[in-house]
Length: 341
Image (tube, rainbow, N blue to C red; front, side, top):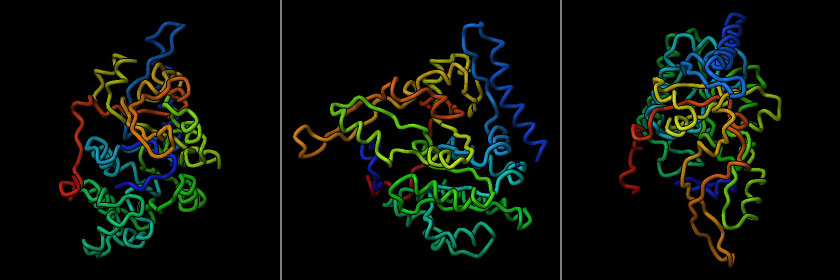
């Protein structure tokens, strides 16, 4: 069971050549697409290989924020592919993950550097997380992620190994997550990929037209609604933020993307995808917890995001990853979840 923060109460649910290459890719992603559009129309987004785009973004940004959809198989496989790419260790120092308890940093440090860590001790890293209880992270995908980091590191010199920073401190606000990332990564002159739920990376909160707009305004403007990415950028940390979800809604805005091999990454600034209200791509029928009119309790409301107040896609994220049709999405069931149903 997830322990909610105040803002979450609404929802249940690196060298010169590399930098030149990254800049060329980013420019290509926007400029070449314009060849297919009229002068008065925004250019189409173009497909980029996600692993290459992430690696190149690390050449120009201190942080690449790779939004997570918890236990989604397609995203998990993409992260594993990234870890196994021989280009990756040269451009990254750290990976900061939501699915690990910060109090067990010593355990994961030993493990990913090849130390002898009994399995029961290792599991404490993702089972004893203060913000997610009930074994919510205890799945084979979580364990495989850490194992692949270990395997990657064992083929690298010690001074080039990737450090995993465990990001769950039990923090009540995303400001504290950003402080951890600054303390462990950017203040030390290091670069990182950070993996948290996508809501941690939106540059502005979503606004929902619930029956109690004053409560919505309270949540929308609450300090804990300021995302991890927004806090990092306020501290002048350069962030490349990526949102991932099924392709269906993107296809309705840019039909040719239906033919893209997935997963596919697209840089959105100035494109038809970027200029679309992000509410278009927000999950439909989100269940919100709203105070009762008499103030004595709460009830559920199914409300889509407001397009005008929730910002354009390019205001929220730098890029999107299309994972494929929603009907093809697969999820890895956490261990013990049968007992929790």
